[in-house]
Length: 391
Image (cartoon, rainbow, N blue to C red; front, side):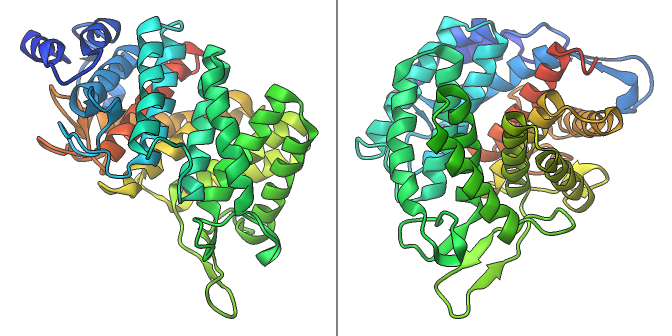
């Protein structure tokens, strides 16, 4: 099965609206046959070239969503508006970092990372500061990771500016935790989880004890209020009503960032309780937020990103978590099933479009958030392949 026929590549390379796409097409050019069938119709009979598939996924993302003039990714295919899509662009920076590391620190990808961080600031009112603490937490995580990958201090500066502002989202209402946004109406797992990941990772870079203290108190709030005894992770607490009401909704991305927080603190402290939490949460997500071993559908809005975020942090747990072999094998097989399902059933060819339902191809149109989740999944598989954890 050819991924990008000559006509599609030609169109992508010469479309004037896509900055760097000619170079990126070359960078991400996939072999002609990234998936072969060795007999029968089952995924088990197919061989998947995950590196080539990740290249194709990245090229599909850039072909349809990169807006050259604004230097950002748009929510709609071929769009030109930023429309406050700050947090999806944070995850776009993360997937570019995935590619940058996988492609041996390719300079072309670094150029696009530079452009994106400039474009987001310009589109966000010439500032990285945002009304939503969760949005800024995602951008902190992505910027710090880009800094660690590239050594470019510009990314570290973005993370530092945001971290100073995000700390203002903490108070002692409900014993701590970060608010969702600056109206201070809801304490939020989507803000506190990625901020905890960030603080723990920042400590590993700077060895600043204050960053570890922040990671610890953020995690303690999550553990006390959001992590349930069965591993479920609640979404937050409504502080605008009396008495306060827990928001018990279950979303895959909250499981992802909270298990990711536990993993980072385990790496720092070697405290086995953090590892136990991470495993408990991962197992709960696989038990309750899947159908036939595939993650439940997202949507074409914010929810389109949720599954990709969970995949990102489950992948980190597999690679960095010092797991029992049976757990590692179980999680790897789970990701493999999801990736095989998405690629064989849920991808529109030859444009490489991913929808919110990984079992159903989206047709001729989709949106940025499920597209990013699909790229995250394929990059996860490419990394597991590089680590010799999948074939």
